Image (cartoon, rainbow, N blue to C red; front, side, top):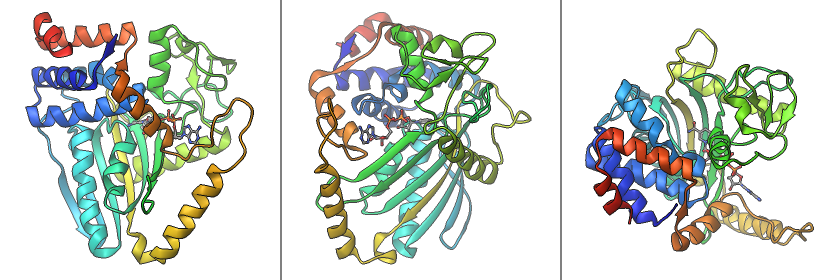
Length: 354
Ligand code: NAD
């Protein structure tokens, strides 16, 4: 199924409204999800809709929920998202952090209890547009773990994303936005739905043997995802779990915590005004020269160009804005079933999607 981005936004928003979300909120969530598809991350795009609608029906995601500032001391702010949509509460939390960082040079934003924050890069882009640097440590709880610690055979962690965005004068920002698992969990779902194998080094079966079969994560006994960079990815995932889970949310992936089958993110964000820690002129000239130096590297066989983090998303965006978003049949069917369950008629779905 190939669909124009605007149509997909309208359909997504209509499904969320039918599920109980007010239109303005549904539009923010729909824009975020479709932007993930546009930027090449189908794992965090509209394929999440069935999960979101299920979460609303079970009270795991609370529509029309806004952040509550629990406390603010100096540059530190603690915020409770109270299970509101991560796309909404995450942006609200970033706005608080931006305001603090502009006054004080730095902000430490502790955001707990957000329903799925989606693509963390979306929150980082919101900050970096203001000329500020942001760093995000995130854990993922509320469901069974998916990723095995390095050397282990059973899942113990979520796919805990890390993101860092750095503004570039007169250029596109550098945005490193990544799961600490070798691939995002949604990419295993997309591969399974599309009948494809995942790349080497991303999955192990229950006995710890490497496999490319995405079905192992659904089987009993269950396989696991693995971390990027072996022990290093595991180490960073654990740091995310400790900073975002144990410290901010008080809710990590350890088994005494609830796993009712939802997606909750806790996120610790550091926002930094480059002006308070460096010479902005030197920062700009040095950054420009360094990125140019990276881009000028001779390429390996089969590689067109050295890319800067954030560039693959911009390349996908310019392609998909013109050529539309292609969804695999199973993902599309599951969106249609979700629309049905939310009470949208087939005629309405047809009108919105064409
Ligand atoms: P990925 O592996 O596709 O990309 C990771 C990073 O590497 C990106 O910044 C990208 O720009 C960069 N990159 C990719 N190819 C590159 C190349 N050839 N050269 C240079 N840089 C390159 O992303 P992922 O790890 O699959 O994560 C996908 C998304 O999933 C992210 O947006 C992440 O925030 C999101 N995520 C969210 C959650 C959650 O719970 N909310 C959990 C896990 C992941």
